[in-house]
Length: 504
Image (tube, rainbow, N blue to C red; front, side, top):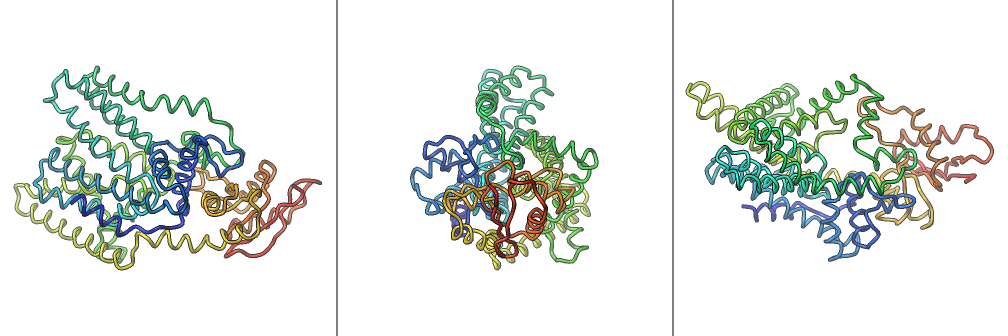
């Protein structure tokens, strides 16, 4: 079954313009920096600052693969092969979790693993150079170990060693994706509730052994970034707190409301029998009810997993960013929770209740089959990258043809532009947490562009986004003091425009 998932993931994967999802391009840049001995640095930014934003787990894996095939983009398919293997490992441990922790039969466990890993959510992530497949491959075995540790039958001598090992696993998980800290929080909370203070302390110590050196290194080596770069390349916590200061309680409420709606849309996409709004809303409620019921049931048999999923989802809902990657990263757990709800409902004493559960399960499975048939027909797991590549293609070609290798360019998709043209590049406007609930205005973007031109030696500004084009035009029209950088329009680029920076 796991080998079949690897084969399906490889079949679904295709080389693409790495960088269209931002993080994928940055991961590859960091891998190149490590593999070529330049340190853990953002090579595409002016001065190649130390990379304090992204945890190093996935870039380290890519760096090892880069040493095998040291040419980009020839090595992209090798990166995607590794992601397919990680997806197969996630499938292996999904069925293992279902059998060993939840007590399911072999057929049910294998079916859940296939639904969790060989369908659109994981195929989409596996086909992109993103860290989620590695995260899923590490998360499932860590959860199995965590459940063994907190089990009442766990003996004290082995418990100490296991607690330290689980802590180490939690630390490693956080170095793949920072949100993996939810696993450590779940472990420590459950051990503390059981008054197993020694094991809780050892679990914390194990995580600290992995995380503290990284944190100290970042604190020692990190340098201030130019204005406009902190959001995309600075501290996660600083970015979040800045957004909180700007929007206050209203921003938190708006973020949670937006993300609840987005999660509902994602669930409807995967399980709905029809595209009508009323059917999609009903399906989203049904799937959410199954998820909550499954979490409640798993709290007895798999308390670590239930606590992790609850903490993880709460963080996801409060985080001011679109939730699809966060939700799909734990898609195997979403499927397992819904399966736990079905298994519980099928054993209800009342015949009418059992019939209702069977009917609801049939509706969701038929909706899933419909969604997968449509995804397969449209190759939906590739279409997003293909569309983004077509949109940004004119910009990359313009930069390659009209700038010199020594130029610094302010562009959309700065990481992609660096990978495919070699130009040092920066984002045009900052990425802020506040904009998730309060969209940036043209005047705000114009002010950010003017600040960027004063702080960074940019030679060209090129955008394919009409809102940024309008903001750049506003900057170009303004009177400036003598000697200050100014923009001169050079012509259209796709739906945007290219500008040269004068008086530099």
